[in-house]
Length: 78
Image 1 (cartoon, rainbow, N blue to C red):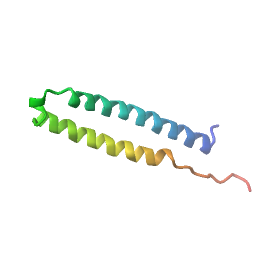
Image 2 (tube, rainbow, N blue to C red; image 1 turned 90 degrees about the vertical axis):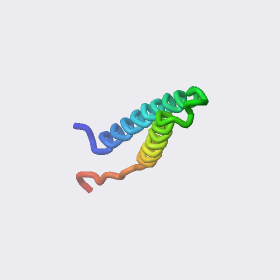
Image 3 (cartoon, helix red, strand yellow; image 1 turned 180 degrees about the vertical axis):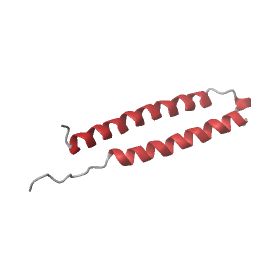
Image 4 (cartoon, helix red, strand yellow; image 1 turned 60 degrees about the vertical axis):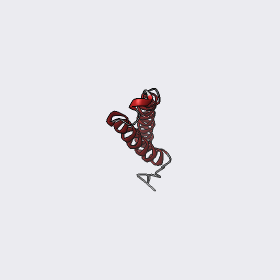
């Protein structure tokens, strides 16, 4: 049987993995935006990219807050 601490550690690991994937998505969108021709920088597509990048940044920030958390679980006896 897996302890609560081990389950929590595994959940934090999954959060870190999710954060890495979301960072990769953000980087892909940023590269797309950076390589967009100048005449399209003010387009609706560019605005949508900026909004998506901002939303991903917010999610990354929230996940960073979770990554730093710890929980001390009480023992069964004692």
